Length: 334
Image (cartoon, rainbow, N blue to C red; front, side, top):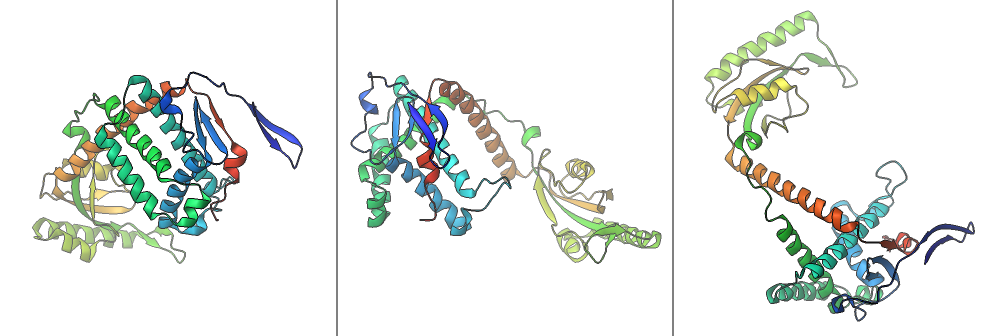
């Protein structure tokens, strides 16, 4: 029985329980690497402080490298959830997923080959040698513990590959095709003193539209559309690469439709959106590199969707108990 207790208010916050199964597989007994308080139990697998901190400190280092060390108390959602709380939840979800996958792998006889074990050991050695003596002692991190962590991660990748190998890899060009276009935009409104768009007078609109007509004639004869756009367009971005489902959101559907109707080297007629008038030049009606990348992303999404379905079924069979009092008390500012 696990009790979460608020000593300040003398209140029991929650009660949880777990069953201890004496029929443990030998592979699941890892007491030689465990150190510190028990942080979580996932099925029959126990996760102790030192192992949980390997994941938490690694994730913390990645975020701090990008955002700095002052992010942990930031209320990122506006609901009182700090960045630190978000990270702890994210890391715990990762640990739970890895332990469920490892348990299912053992049931199905999926194990690491010698080469994969050697890879895990090499990663562990590099990681361990990069730690400070202070961190090794403070978080009870050993090279053997890191071998366990990297083995779990490599095994999870192996299980993912096996469970998604039969995903449909056929993606049509229609679904994935990416085009690259450049455009000239002339606004049909003015900016006021506060930076807001306000309507033009009739005369100003006529003058602006006449300018677009002149630019259209120039565009049809231009050898370098980009240079013409750079000198005349009022848009910050001149060139876009996109597909049918990810066209520039700031412009109307008419912009995307016009772009997909053009052949390489063609110039559109004047296209009207809420912003004003556009002239579009098609750099490529089939950007091969971008299209291949999108196809890869579509297939990868199918694989993650399939594995998510498999994992969802697996996770139904695992009781999860988290020592929330300990986990939530861990400071990321130490």
